[in-house]
Length: 230
Image 1 (cartoon, rainbow, N blue to C red):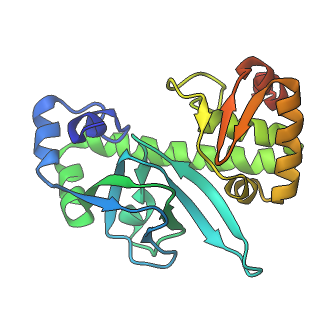
Image 2: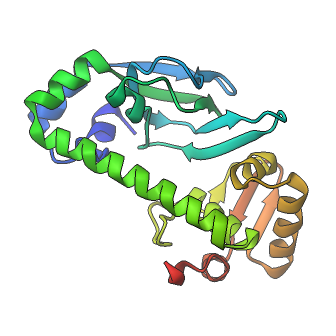
């Protein structure tokens, strides 16, 4: 994914014309991260918004017991850090690269004047923030009402290229994700995740290999996820 394609596809800027995208692109810089490199830490000043050009990153917070709580995994086309850029508050999570990643960076001092001059972009920004709130609300409901198997199936499907309604968003089926990261994201143990994955592998729903999980039966996994209940 190139920089122009990324900006045009981000919800913030999808209604902008080619000339406006080109103008915005002039305000951006790029940054590369190696595997396990930290982009920013919880509590840092939030002066930049990032768009993911390539690679994957996780947003997480360290717990008092040393464990991690993973909030989300971001890949190409996703936006990182928009909340702190808007409200000037410290970063609400730590973001770490899961693999080599390239990011497009937009500084707050450049973004805010652009939003003031381009109302359609400002509306897009508000839409993205509203979508983030809805997503967090959905995750909270899932954690309270759904059993681990359903939450885990939903998470795997999203990571494999489906949205919160179970609809395909890309051509992915393979999830490059450590079982411990999946456990951290679900708030459970690696042993519980491994046990469930092994059971699904026996049923032909997934295929496991080192550091990778392939969805073999998306319809069957969707039934476990109870997408129809959304």
